[in-house]
Image (tube, rainbow, N blue to C red; front, side, top):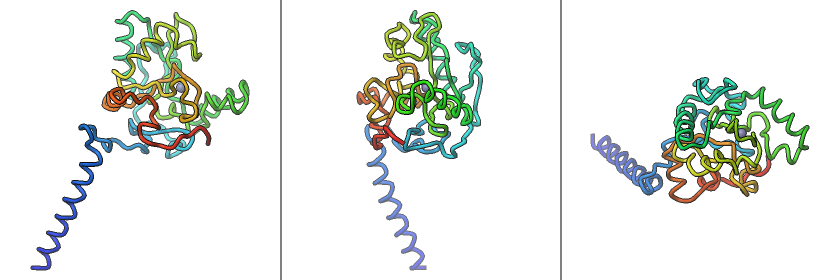
Length: 231
Ligand SMILES: [Zn+2]
């Protein structure tokens, strides 16, 4: 009996110390850094880059949907990204910056084989891989990344998208809808990708609000991940 009581007390003490440590580590400014996984492929916070492929490598999201608006190509997105994208696109339209539409959404492992091969063929290995990920290493495979464009403003999947009305509005406002510009200008040494003002990644507004308040624009740096310019 005594032994049992002692054991229970020891467990309670150990638990209290774990709870206290985790509270200190995770509840900075009320922002819980452990609320989503950074590694699970279906997590809104998953970090996918040249050092962190999808797991499993041929992951397919279970919650793909085809947005009915701002999606002339009938492309698919993971549901949370689709819901947030609709709000973003409607807000952009209301703000007078035109129809921000999906140029590329979910891409399967197999589709990425072709996309990667095409960019490497066109631009060579070094420049091609600053644009297109190897299969299994693309955020597009999560269904949470979108390449957007404004059909009437040109600059489709080109750096000059950043100078369009839609591109400027997106840079200033995407965070309000839970998206980040995933590969900001000059981020190549950390992200491994050239400036892609058209590529937005859904991470949820809790994280984008936190990033916005800290001024951090690069996901790897926010999570103190190592730079990943290379495979
Ligand atoms: Zn993209």
